[in-house]
Length: 191
Length: 225
Image 1: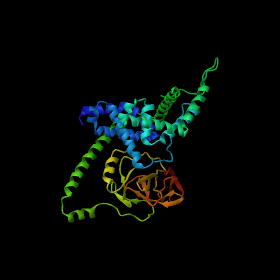
Image 2: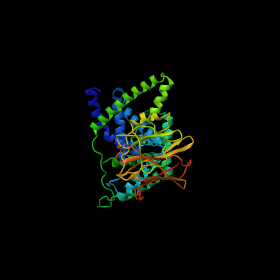
Image 3: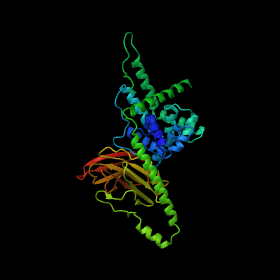
Image 4: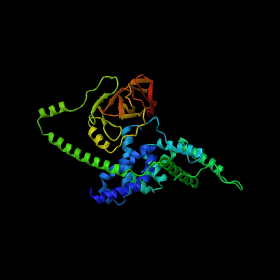
């Protein structure tokens, strides 16, 4: 790799690291696994860097590498590897209700098949269009629609959405500012 | 419809918050390590291409030479149940059951590959891009290797300062003694496997590692379905 190309890769990796991590966290459910996945994806992007640079959308190329790596990993494992310590980690910040609700949602997300999970994450967490999701997953538009619909339906069946809606309603009630008072029950969200 | 859109927006918002919290403590990108790893992966790809070309050339040599090569092949015979982990060489396929091999990878964290002999090479290539899971001390992981016929093997890794004396896998109400593998200088991790579990489709699988005084060291569970 030329010096220029390597510099470009370094800048890209530094600039996209946290964004990739957030997507990877929702795919894997654990920040260590997320870091592993992003590192593997970026190492692969390094190997294919000239293609990444030439791609119309470099981000889409790298995100696709990461999603495919994750899918392969899940497929190869048969079931995900379960560590005794492996649960979504929280370090505080929000109210207990919100944290519990979010944990429930992430756990429910992790119970979705890898493909459905990726579709839900890209479509709703990353707010991408159906066409973009289709391109990232290498799937047809109709497949993306059915995957996201099934994913959301399973989250509803799982009760995660009910918990989420009920939890948010409870927090909203707490957040209601009394006359002359200040909102309570939530802390500022961490960046 | 409006309610559904609001609900989906809410899901998106909460997922974004969960992700931000989940990786909130992450530091900057380890750019030097990424470049190093990318270079290693590129070099491995080149070496594998070279090996592939050599293997193709070997197809035209006389049968006797082929047999000799097979005798020299580093596959390790299937073991009897052993006390403590058996030492195997890195990246070398170890037969663990009918039409099934396992190899431990060195470097870059705990990694292993389970495959049929026919797909072993491609799995090893794919594994070049898969990092090892960061294992907590005194922990075990648990995976199921499936074929069309059902569960072919229950596999996993252990992480401990001293290797466990044994690992058991409980499935379908029965407990099986796992075979343990480790690398010559495998540090604090190794792998285990059981290949004679019943073809479960539901239920829970539990792996338990024990210390040398037979106290439980760590346990992991997974759904069989």
